[in-house]
Image (tube, rainbow, N blue to C red; front, top):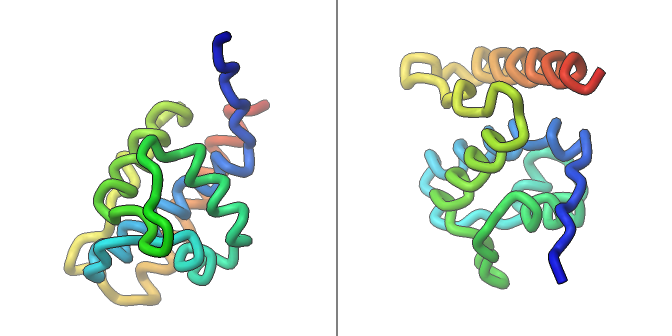
Length: 125
C-alpha cells in the first residue's frame, strides 16, 4: 500500500520563511534545541499548528520535552522550502553582523516575508 503524498497548504508555505527566520535566530543565540512552544511564543502561531507544520517539514522526529536539534531544524526547513517553493528559501539568508540593529532587522525581515508572499500569490494564481 503506497502512502499518498500529503497536500501542502498555502498557509504552511507562507509560514516556512517565518519558521526559518525564528530558527536561525534561536540557533545564532546559542540554542541547542528548539521546541514548538518556543516558536509559537515568538511568532504568535498556535502551538498545535507549529507542531503539525514541523512534523510535515522535518524528516527527523523531535525529542519529547527537548524539541528538535536547532542546526538540524534549520537545515530541514531549508531543504523543505527548496522542494516546495519556486525560488527556494536559501536566498533568505540571515543578516550580516553589521546589520544587527533590531529595527533594521525587523523591517528587512518583514519586507522579505511580504515579497515572498507576493511571489507565492503569483505562483498560486
